[in-house]
Image (cartoon, rainbow, N blue to C red; front, top):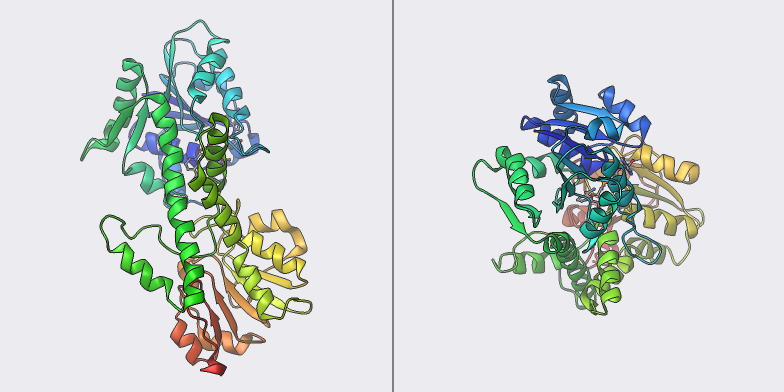
Length: 440
Ligand SMILES: NC(=O)c1ccc[n+]([C@@H]2O[C@H](COP(=O)([O-])OP(=O)(O)OC[C@H]3O[C@@H](n4cnc5c(N)ncnc54)[C@H](O)[C@@H]3O)[C@@H](O)[C@H]2O)c1
């Protein structure tokens, strides 16, 4: 099937390459000419495991192409996916300007019946706005469907090729049939397509993100209780995660969630609640709790050094908002850097892939190391923010010989606490009893 994807970000590019892998002919469109030129040269605009191979293979076989010319791409396409950004507006609402701009462009370009599919995360009622925007530009028949995306950055290719479910929101049978056909190759073992109303599909995406974020904030709040009463959040995580009604995923206490989705989507959902006069108290509390959590590591460092950090060097391991991505949007590490700098510290950061993005954002306000132990050299404390595999088991002897003072702040509870204490480090975790080897 010939299709077009509008927007070649994390979602659009993975979706386009994924559909091409199943034999469809896909054209990916973006307004960012530099990004399209990179893709034509087989260079990836961001880090995503498995994506370069997928893009290369399908480009080589002539099933995947890139252009800035939306009209050429859309002409002859049976389905056009909108996968552009939906950032937070100032009031927390989802800003639909890119979605509606794309819809108008698509309306001007279609040359026969076309299914226009919103893959971007959009508030309930957006399909109606997309329909109106397209209708204002064309006399051709078309349908609007919602097909929200649930991929996780860092594992996006797997998530797209082997989705837990595919949500299709549509009222038009022809659109439903076409989307079923499009996803047929992906659904070989079991049919995981769930068809529902457009509004239900739009809301399902927000519900999923709000539920996942709720679990994280809930555990973070429990972690704070643990620290006061001397309990260990890791025991509690295992204790409740083994209950099949709860399950083990998304129960890690840590430095707070980041990324381009949870915060933005919770704010958009909360805004929707306010607009509809339906109080969403849980959603509001989850976001507030996360904002507080993102400051926890910084406060811990500042408190440890008596309230100010002038003359202190603090190392940070992991800057991306989570492992296996170079995405730093709303990353907890960025909040930490700002707190440390404001308290007068010199900050040295390391990340396996996010360094160029951090450099572009922060310039020389932060020192960036190309090796984790270089980021620990002569530091007064080392903070783990993003638990990349390579950062989970530090060489404690090497750290002890290179750090100026032996203070470890483990923002993900992955470092070997007992070993660290035995090696003379002061160790702070999240929601775990504080251990100072000097006072044992
Ligand atoms: N990133 C994720 O993990 C993820 C997961 C699920 C859903 N989503 C949702 O998917 C949407 C896209 O997210 P993303 O992270 O891929 O965004 P992104 O910022 O990485 O990419 C968006 C792309 O759209 C392009 N664009 C903007 N306006 C355009 C237009 N009129 N025509 C063509 N291209 C245009 C931009 O240049 C950019 O390349 C958002 O609504 C997001 O909430 C994201």
